[in-house]
Length: 149
Image (cartoon, rainbow, N blue to C red):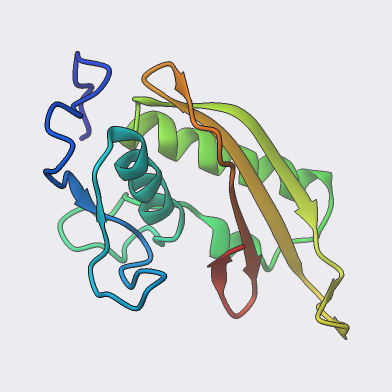
């Protein structure tokens, strides 16, 4: 289980990497792009949690969210509530240092002009240890993939 670090940041040495960002290939094509701040690493941890299906991670079968399984449900307000509950429950348990400030679930009807029968766009605005992260985390969930926008 995750535990909360009492300090608000661990950016004591700005030239020392804290972890690996997601996606693992950086914008410049370098492999294993590293994060140098607590906020960057917390966002990478959040993406890892959201993009993982429960049972996918060895030795931690409860790690992840039920986003992919919810894709085969009716696309209505009950689906939005199910996605909201799954995300808030998982973040509360695995990443208690992240607070959700805003969570928007929007049904997707078209992607690149082609008809997409079932999908949602999810946008999260979060705080890490009380410090607001300026960039929202937005991703698209369809029957074939979960990808960051």
